[in-house]
Length: 153
Image (spheres, rainbow, N blue to C red):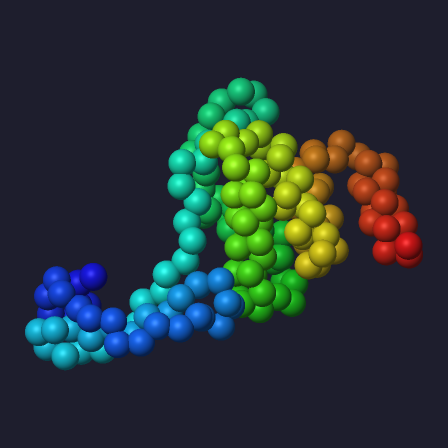
C-alpha cells in the first residue's frame, strides 16, 4: 500500500482490529520513508459472481448497484451508516452462502427483501414495489397486508 503523503510503496501495519461494524478490519499503517500514519479498512469482496437478469442477459455483480437501490429504498428513513453497511454485508453473506457463480436476479431480490423486512418495513415496501413491479394499488395493498399479517403472528 502506497503512502498517501509521499507515495512511497512500502508501509508497515502498526495495529489491526475489527472495525465498529464487526465485519471489516481497520489497520493502522506507517510509511517506512516519511513516518506518516494512516488507517485502511479491509472487507470481504464478492468476486466472480454473475447476475442473470429476467431477460437472460448476464452482468457482473455490482455492490454499487445494490447500495444505490437500497439508498433509494431508505431515502428519508432513520438508518445509521453502520446499520446500512451491516445490511449490505448480510445480503452479500447470503449471496455467498449460495456458493454459485451465477445467480438469478430474482434470487438476489428475494435475499434483499428478506433482509429489508427485518431491518425497515417502509424500505421493504419501497423496494418491493419496484422489484415486484406493482401494477396497481391492489397489488401494493396485498403486499402491505402480508407484511401486517406477518407482524401479528
